[in-house]
Length: 87
Image (cartoon, rainbow, N blue to C red):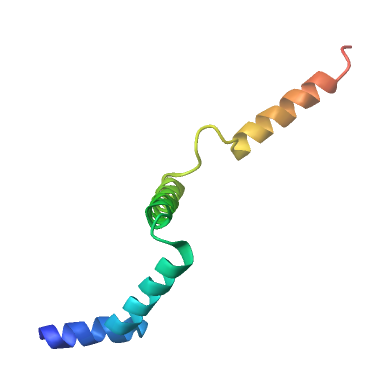
């Protein structure tokens, strides 16, 4: 694929070209102002990083601090033993 084909494919994939992106950036600048843009960028970056970290942790299995089914079964058995009257 040529460079022209690659550029057309990317811009047509989202339907946004350079003029549309410039308009979006100008609107964001007008809405939030130049002083809030760094804070907004930082917030978006942290949010994306937290989201990716959460997805990575989901693939690893449940965190060790959360109860698993086995923990609940042990707790239920222990509570049943505690409720039984001594004979």
